[in-house]
Image 1: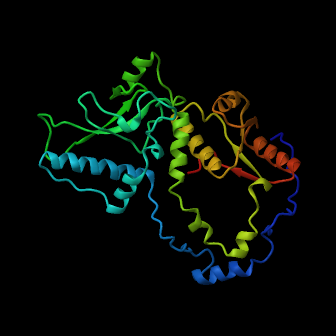
Image 2 (image 1 turned 90 degrees about the vertical axis):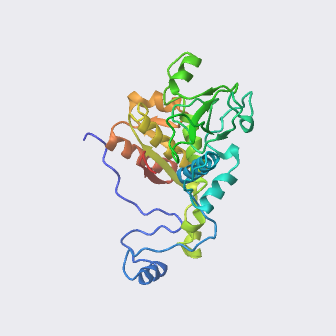
Image 3 (image 1 turned 135 degrees about the horizontal axis):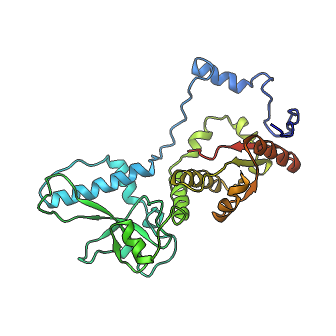
Length: 306
């Protein structure tokens, strides 16, 4: 409404570009026949490298610690599968989300409680945790209410000086101000980058034939746009932004965020390349105009991809 009309669609002179009106390639026909019908699911060849979600590995790590603690108490509890448990144990502590993002006075490999219990660097991270704080998991002591097979671990937070905290409000009292989800923005971006390492892209690209892979456009031939608005004020919104931005950064791409004028400052404060796009339709048209000006194909992406 009131926006400039979008220019008629033109043929793009990019490798592998084929308008929808052209007949499918021989390789696509072959894939359809293998699947039994158009759109049939294709299974990527196995690469021999197991990939586990970071949440799965975190669960396996915690279960293993619980099992060790319960065995010490004379009880037995189940554990996760051997492969995922081994994968979690083999993950270097610097590649775990709970590791501080900046150098600290105490080496996370030497984290200990006052009573000398070891604290293991966690695989995940709270969305409000500051860059210089770490997150870990420690084994608990049995108390009078402890039941056989229950409990065994506790999530804790470690200051740059090595002090151990159990709750968010304790850290807020220590630093003298409330914590927000913007305090944990960098940590959430790194968490998503670490998650991305568990994605086996070779299996995805194996779905394409060598001829098709050669025709894929290069990243620099595309203008990546993310249309967004008012997503920086909530935990969910910041988490979605972190996932989206981290995925692009892992691919070596700096996307442009097209946002509403009222939110432009908040997006830029997160270190994002952001421009004023206006409302939805206006922003989408601006993406197309900018791509045409740059001589690139336009790729528009949602701000909550997973």
